[in-house]
Amino acid sequence: MGTLRILALAAAALVAAFAAALGSARPVGVDAPRGRGEVGIFFYAWYGNPARDGGYIHWGQRDHAPPGEIASAYYPMRGPYSSTDQRVLRAQLTEIAAAGIDTVIVSWWGRGSGDDARLARIQEEGRRHALRVAVHLEPYPGRTPASVAVDLLHLRTKGVTDVYVYDAAQTPATAWAEVLKPVEGFRVFANTALPGFAKAGGFDGLYTYDVYVYNGSSFPRICASARTLGLLCAPSVGPGYDARRATGDERVRDRQAGARYDSMWRRALAARADVVTVTSYNEWHEGTQIEPARAAGAPYSSYDGAWRVRGKRAQKAYLHRTAWWTSRYAATLAGR
Image (tube, rainbow, N blue to C red):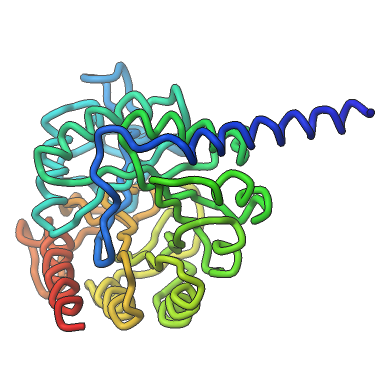
């Protein structure tokens, strides 16, 4: 038997073993996954500054020089903060909970990463605010269905039962199905707009994440198809997109003084979304954040003018509008 064939069989056996373990083990120390009608928000805990971390982390992308010059089209109300600062984390989760959000979906780059190390602190703070914590499983180097099987076992020990797999369609559905179809006690969502792919891959649902590509017009079609296949539909809404300072990407989705955010929410509700996911709380690089921003002058944009508010009131305009939409979502569900 050839070497490649032996390696392939060994990998398949490894996947099967982990899938069996996932299927037989029960979640530890967590509530059962909730039903329909949730709101989740994508959250990034990867920022650092000299006072806490010995240097600026993520704020200086593309040769920017914090604190005055950061890799974002907007400037945080809190300045270039550290995600390891417990006071910052507490304030952030307080805002998220006040906005009517149920679940914080934490960007996670694999076992042993900084995100993995910070997960317990986020969960502890989340419990203070009655927030569930899910994981946004990023495409870390070497990510495969076999490695994700190990990740799920690891996350189960941490009490995580909801996992959102970013860029899931980069791997064939058949490969995902080997790992996911036997799994119990998890809800695993695929980042795709193709319900057929999610179903074939053994996922429980799907989400779109990208608020540049998806403006909400396709949400009704996507969710209707997902329901037909017995999948949860978790379309992603967001205020806009501007990554020019962080990545050089010249594509922009203007916020239109809040009108774009309203439009996406409206379409998610019209699609009867099972879960509404928000992109994002604090992805400052891509300009999708709703975390408070302050007017810092050129070259930064601000939230001034959103829903006709300006100055200090505008700093939290997107959080206040999110609270309005989550309340309306709950009312819509109650009237079904």
